[in-house]
Image (tube, rainbow, N blue to C red; front, side, top):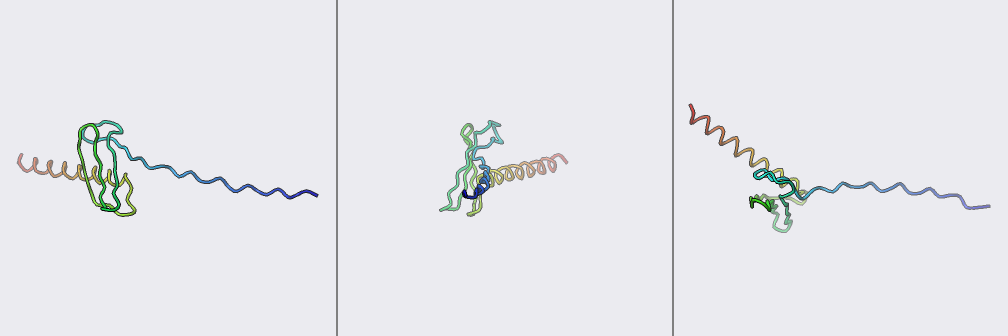
Length: 92
């Protein structure tokens, strides 16, 4: 009599990697923005290698590079909205 065949373990799930390079909202160069995370000082930095724009924000141990980039985009949108509101007030 032979041994019973053992079943193979299920294959491991592939975890998708999160990007650390993004498109710059100022100069529109693709993969020009690099995100750096410093968990010791709890600071996140995104910097465009082409036009030199920088943004820093506070991070937590759960933050990812996409979170810092998203905060930068949100801050840019907020500034643009404030400028639009000021321009509308001046026009009146």
